[in-house]
Picture 1: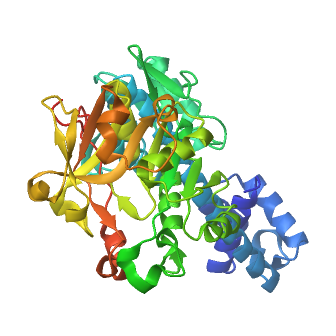
Picture 2: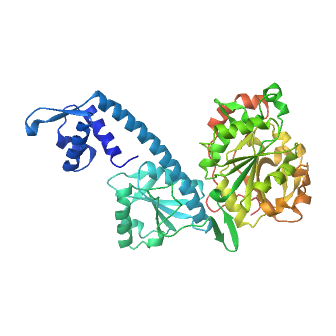
Picture 3: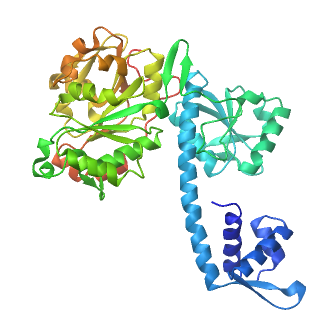
Length: 472
């Protein structure tokens, strides 16, 4: 939004809502100086958006014109679009930066600020497994925020925390930083969202790299991690529904299921997607072209024949750039955020991690997915069929893999789970046991009420201090 446009919108709103308001009244309502209000009113009057009434200097009033109503609507639409883009960028920025903080063991944070931005910071911090110890602001503004008591800045300086997250208006942040430093808060502990979140993630205390080091183990983050989406299946359980449409492209609420899935992953911070397809592959090409503005980082890889999960991953890995990548099924959705899974995978030094959920948390064919057998330290001990489905951890179809390892797998057609012992060759592999829920649209019953299921799915976060790996 251009500089001054927000002020124009505020002024037009006030003139429309309060006919005959004086210039001094308008200045108080929008919170700017009288002189700046005067200049803005002159400019809007010249553009034909408002007109003056009265002739005496101290009795001049302002009315909005039809042209002004149109301009007010245009600015409102521009403001909504700008706000959505900004808050989406804020969430992506926070996921990346707070994820890197967690990777370094910094889990106790204090939140400075109230309002919408503070809410976004709070919930994103909780999603990343951080513990919000307190909320700081002047107490005359409110008694509590998100059920947390509000502490004064002087009290905050005496608290034990790893980072203080500033979530105030842009114009207030410099003053907040100065005040906190005067109270004894070290500069490196103060972190705030930059005004332009479209730029690389930067904070006052430095520029986090795309791969943070935890001990000697590199920990990948979403922005630097490719996602391979397996879309090659025929979806035979859906009968006539998939005779002319691939299962991942079946519409839900008027849009392909795959679009819902990729947009959700983009909100988590992932940006590069590789679609591995075979059945009706031309429709995936149309999908990539149609949604390239929303999803510019999508690449289609067509399999020469159905390759199975293992063969499809080997075929797609030639196009993977990141050292660690994620593979997911294109016809299922798990509520588990993937950033904590990446963190646990890197910290444990795994070369393979699979996400699993409890059988009761599965919608759609849990008994056909099989369960993972776990070793005493959460390592993969094998893959079982439906005989133990009601007491085991069900395969959620989400895998974290080492690119070099997969590149060494044989070319051809084969499954992943049934050949895992051979493919891993004794390397470190683990199961991330998630409290999340899984929906698989592979059956007509689930597909027909999938929109209701997706709407009911809430986000799941790993509790602070936990890594989600069974047997840790």
